[in-house]
Image (cartoon, rainbow, N blue to C red):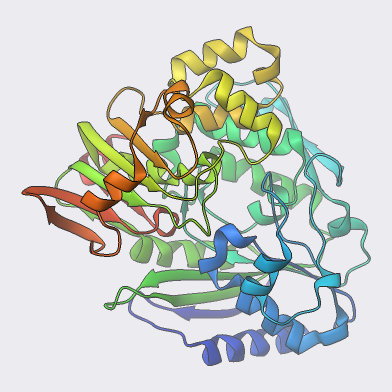
Length: 425
């Protein structure tokens, strides 16, 4: 097991040129390869620098980089415009779209007894480990799993083997891992590298992926004093040391403790990145532990036009809404359609305030009736954006009309909490 590169620090700024040099140095240490598969994230992780790293890998290997398989999970396939914007001038014919419902094969099963133990005896199902067939049967002599380590609502800290086992996973593996995290408790997981969901994925990787030549290329991204996103660290290796080293830095860079709970928070969702609440509810996930009881969370979402990333999940969200853990567990028990799509059920739990604070969604393309139908309050985007202008607000604390608000410009890049609530979780 090898750590090929471990460069970074909370104040470090790794330039594009240095990032390329570090990757090339690591690839040289790996040795000659003739059939390479790159597995980066999709456009929803555009800030990860995975696009540049994938492009650099293509420059290094050229025709030996045979395929790029974005780890879509349940997300929509990338458009040609998104591929060009994220990956630059690369041949589009080497990109493949992962279909989580049809493109996977079973590589092993994590037994129900292990899930039962990890869920604190709340769940009794097994966990079928499924991955895209290209990963195991594509004949590749190197799989480059590329992405960002950052606090995450389902897995605690994003990336590492999640990129393969969930990002290229199948319905049961995605559904059951998400539901395990939701039942265990999102606030007990976020920002923690070790947790039940990660333990299940580690079990699957150790037992079922050991013969797949995977090397992880992980970044840590933070803001500099000018408010720009910069690379704080890059870690390249073929085992867990790579991930845990990156996770340690991410906690220093991406996790912000606020001195007092927020009574009003405003979160902006970039319309190029966020088109659904399935993705946009990061505004809720990443700020919930910083919000005071009875606080208001205002989500400025000019690009939001739907709830789910596919029609089936969208219809489930519209049908059942974000009504909290007890109500969702009851709905799962009583309804076959929701029980058959546990990632949707998990999302309904994640997206609820559990009645503790108020969520006002200000979408660009959803109606008042649609928003209130899923148990959010509706806010008129144009009016709210005039009061809380995202172009004028600074990331962090601001004074607006005599009230103090906390502004988050991109919820996907961090995690905010008060120490009291984080320690209570």
